[in-house]
Image (cartoon, rainbow, N blue to C red; front, side, top):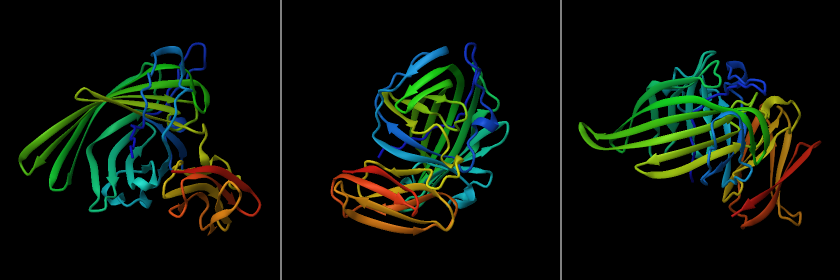
Length: 341
């Protein structure tokens, strides 16, 4: 399964005909508790033109899977002791068991590295020279440059990871995604050169260099890009990955019970996760039914915390096809369709 990792650059604003967007710490820096659903695509997409008053239309883009972006407290992650300088962590899909670590302040957002839970042994990439992902405030035509460096060992091989970052806010205007139209957006373009050199003791084995071109569109009051494209060039071989979000607001902004309900991945295979918002003490039931209404799976849950909940569900006994997933707290019922294949 392809997995996407994007640099977290924040939002900028400028303009002449529209109100000028500006990336600020208070408005656009990810904070613990932020949750967004992302839909991933891997088709070639032209990022379009730079400049002022642009109109970008990506309404035609499909997706191959969905996942959650979550900003969480590092204290609740397995690699917190390896990143003592971090005050925020990110996950993209819990099934991947990976966590990115960062440090945010009113002036900048840094990337300190990543930890992966592996079946044999964990892989920890800690940047002794962290990557600057954004400076605050930031606006149209602003630029910044940075470098990063880290080392990690796996299967007896030492990998030295280093890179350069060149970032510019190169356009603003409006963008249409498959989820709707966003006005006063700012496009941030980042050129990254990433080099991995591999060693066995003092013996050099090989080196790999990849050039990345990241395009990210930020809308007002949304903590992550509403649309993003990464084009990679590895020795002349090009690949495109990207995502867009399903909702312009944070999941955790409202106090309504069951205000948010999402399943992922969808389509699913043998397992999925149900994400919803509930309060401590709620009794929540989750059901999977066939399209005739016959209940095939039921799981009752006693909620022991308040906020965003993630509940795994085993689907191994179900055949390929279309199903209905329903959630209820006794007073409110929500449902959505599920594809198993």
